Amino acid sequence: MNEASTTAITTDDRFTSSAGKQLGIYALYALLALSALIYMLAVAAGSTGSTGASGAIDVVNNAITIALREEPPQLDANRATDASSHVVLAHVMEGLLGYDFDNHLVPGVAERWEIREDGATFWLREDSLWSDGVPVTAADFVFSWRRVVNPDTASQYAFILYPIKNAEAINNGQLPAQTLGVTAVSERVLEVEFERPTPYFDKLVAYLTYYPVREDFFNSTNGRYGADTDMMLYNGAYLLTEWVHGSTMRWVKNPNYWNKENKGYLDEIRTAYITQDVNAKLNMFKDGQIADTHLLSPMLPTAMEQRWQIDRSMDGSVFYLEFNHREDRISRNKNFRRALQLAQDSTELVYKVLKEPSYLPGVSLFPAWLTGVSESFQKEYPPPMSKLDVQQAREHLELARRELGIDKFPPLMLLTGDTPISLLAAEYYQQLFQKNLGLEFRIDAQIFKQRLDKMRAGEFDLVLSGWGPDYNDVLTYGDLFSSWNLQNRGRYNSPEMDLWIRVAQSELDPQKRMDAFGEIQRLLHEDVVILPMYERGFSFVVDSRLKNFRRRSVGPEVDYNYAYIDVTN
Image (cartoon, rainbow, N blue to C red):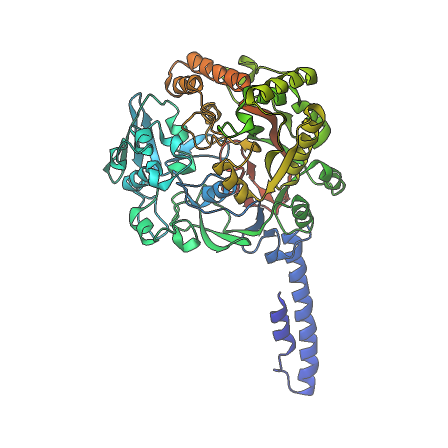
């Protein structure tokens, strides 16, 4: 019972006689007592300290409140690259295929499909609708995919469509977008022609870059598609109905979604907070304001004192120091990179500095969870290792100085994000390279969006970077340092690397394909393209009444598509 309702009761003047006034007072007390009881029940049902409708779990309205880590730069799936955009888009949009609660590939807009050596066919369901009630058609995918590879779009994920016939040539400006090997045979049949055999194509189309876009609506937005709630059409389990930039979002159950009996159980998801401050999120969870949060190592004692159930998961991401290989940078020199490689140890970083129990020391671009031919890729192809050797590191640094023709090394720029973990790691490397090599690194800490801009522009010598899987295949990491991949921020360029990536993209023999990834891993180490830091895991807590919440290695890092509220326990 809210304050306005209580006020309405206490000012009721229907009882005018003396006896009536006395009865009215008793009735008033009864109503107030009933109101208080209802209120207390609402609080009990809606909180670990929450206040019902405004808290983490709103039982009455079948809604939850969550926090996003960052503000999505925009929600144009053809151009999105960041994790926060992926989280939102994975709830309000749907591609041809998707993942179920158990991470199995399942039908989405396509009710069935066929992957061949030369191409693929997708048969679209009739009941997949846009949020304005118009059916999603094969033409919506044709328009979307052509737009991705059109160089005018400047999609940094255009490379993920390169398995399609002519996609790479179009993206390089050599062919018109209309020559892309995708055809709407009819409203319900989509035909795809491959540039090369791509047996993993069904995994690719589940990724957000492959989501559909309807041409007439896109044209009506006058270049602002994805910038606001009214600048998008939706076909996922939820609709984005409110977006106060930098502050809040509101996702509401989509009444037109074809699979609402099996997905999208919540009526509303309120992203009431956008913050990277993990301490603030811990306090919000403790106060019953948000339904889940991840924990850093210093927070674990508090969580245990509260007797919360602490869960752990690997999120699939690897983090590394990426060198700038551009011609105007000191870091283009291989002996310089080799010196830094020999002057550090990821084990010390993880266990003595970060002290995060869910993290693993980085040994490769390919994380431990990836499967090779029949078992773990890292087990089948052990990563090359360099032991900490400060003396040898200094010898390589001196060779680099001579090759570069300089008297001494100038101050170098270490670009990083502004999160506590990023800053801690950056300060560790700053001190380590000063101590072991006498190098001065200046830390350039930037908020998320500005860091991305600086990475694209190459404004760094070394950058704390990371990569999470887009789809469940080794290639999601393996093609990252190809010369054509715009996510290759340091612009590493190696014909040998490109050759092995081409083999990995098209080889049908599983053993030969994994051998190619083994060669890619070898080159990454020998050319010192990156310095692996850690594989990220999460310790996290979830309100006990929220069921089927998922953290994923593949797909959005947090997934509420299958979540529901259960207050029976």
